[in-house]
Length: 283
Length: 344
Ligand SMILES: Cc1ncc(C[n+]2csc(CCOP(=O)(O)OP(=O)(O)O)c2C)c(N)n1
Ligand SMILES: [Mg+2]
Image 1 (tube, chains in turn blue, brown):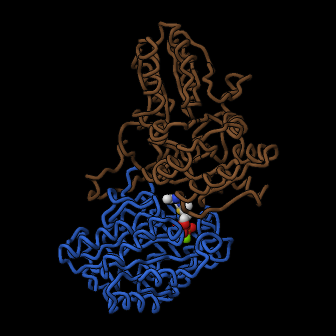
Image 2 (cartoon, chains in turn orange, purple):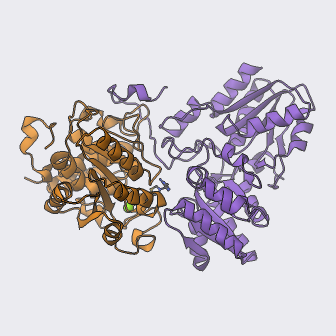
Image 3 (cartoon, chains in turn brown, yellow):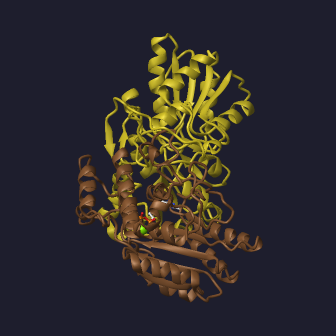
């Protein structure tokens, strides 16, 4: 669907795309010796399916009016989106070593004014879905058939603003809005399910009037099927997909360490992590 | 160095080769060379205060670990409430606990208290004059993470709120001293917090210094310049004073951790000693913070010294390494020295 990727890349498998995104994220983490690498590794499959299956965009024209809008509500996931944008040729890969540096176009937290392909400024969590509602209304007003995708976290399910937007999207029958929730069951202080996500989220969204799906966000065929179903659904309102993901996915020794919001990686472990990833490279 | 700006979104960058420029990371510690540090002074002080006052409870909106409240949560788990990432709820619930006779300490980051939860603080807490203690991390420019986490206007926002007591502590001793005093205070408090390894600054310069709610205190006397400062800018002012002394410029530093109510009496009596350049220094936009509060005090009090302000510009700040940003925006020791020399 996307109009971007080079001819050579057109047949590249989504699994390989996800692997490339993981690798680039690890390389960026290595540059700074830190970063939200656990989240990036966890959400890489979802981003690969978005950027190489679901989204319409032109890599060299990030503000193309016909593009599907992809909002990163979670500013701290920027490292993951930069990796995807580089893989999609929206950002030049040569800039990877500038990640998080002074004067970089890739600051640690995603901001619209810095980075091509970054639609909104995230970081103050719980704002993406409301902006998505307004953009979805705007697209309808312009009779533009593009979709709005809003990627948010399970932590953002705690903000009241999320649910105000969720009700509004139903009221205004925003069938051009697809909300993606990265349910990694992790927040700053602990597990999301120990805080405000006590009741199964897909049931809440369905009760609010959304077409709701919940799938394993690290199972590529399930991710693709859910995205296809969300776009094609015969449903007069918005659609949500809750992706259960595993933080640090793809680098086993990190997956198995005590997972926290900000996974610590020792200086010498970045190279090890890249080597471990290399072993699992898809054919 | 100028950093990225809107216009340059589509200008490719080259990597800064060999230049080991760190990071716009969230958790950058304040450069406080030469000072010993104390771990999590707020958390430990709250545990101690809670031992003496069984009405004290703690609440956080998914930032206990990042505001040192986890120390309290671990020590007194049955007196800690995890509210999830819901800052409006955090403030409403703290108001509710206060209504039922408890003494709540609620923590988040400054930006989320001042911006997202403001109406809830204004109506549920301040208008009722309830004793909720709002203690918040990442004051002013203490992260290179960009405007989402840089609380550059929090003091201006809360200064406009009736009943609110506002504190901008400088160091670990200020924080430890502040906790029991705000716990005993009968109204709402907004306190900025330095977390993690926090430097011990003030007693190094004035061994008998003790935090007193509502009081400004002279940490160092000097004949040429009077700096009136709060927060970590008192540390920067003291360090700058050391450098300026080598050039024969004699700088006094008046530390003013309580922003509201302001200790106008001490400020006026110091300024009225006369003959000194008066400079305010704050980790906050120059709009609506300590500097403007002092300016009003001086004008209405009939004092008219030569007056200058050190503070952040009226702008959304860049992302970048904290030392880079402090230098760029005038908060580093080097820049404080440079600015004061330029005004002499
Ligand atoms: C409105 C708001 N409140 C608090 C924060 C601080 N914060 C940053 S990330 C985070 C955890 C939120 O949960 P989630 O996004 O699910 O975290 P992760 O999965 O990345 O651990 C918090 C509380 C914030 N950025 N915005
Ligand atoms: Mg999460």
